Length: 224
Image (cartoon, rainbow, N blue to C red; front, side):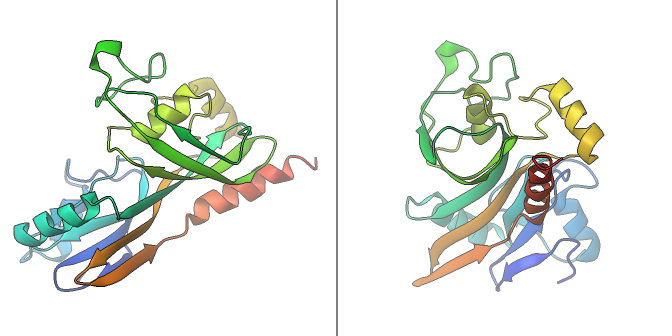
């Protein structure tokens, strides 16, 4: 398998890659699917799950439609874990939380991240703070519902927008951060998948190294 992306797990039915920030799943010549095809012109690829263009991390790709359907059912099962790591603005007031504010299943914006009230539907997000300083907090996040931009919307609505979020965050704040730290992509990373597969538990973890570096750099601002 010739892959332009790091392969974190692979068998005969599917593989799990580490998608970088800024790469679309299926739109355009530089998308995940097209880039996989370039190195493997005789193979087909079917996305089992999708990540926003600017979200990095674990993404599952099946090698035929039947296996894609099979793995989609597995990922949709309530026992399956998909955990994200996010660096958000500010210092969260508690160590963990549960957000269940209804949102729409559409792309919205920073002025009204929840969307039109009449179009909002159930959305549940669980989070735990694993690291924080005066400026940022890093959260481990699980979603119990799969709404579009769910984590980004909930974080923005509860006044802790994800760092680097151009759609839901404050553009002036992001510009200020980039003057200090350089270019910053969306700090949202799918870091863990855990699921049952053919009677065995499969657990895949990919540490968000860029986030760890940013947290360390921001903590140093407390000294100077």
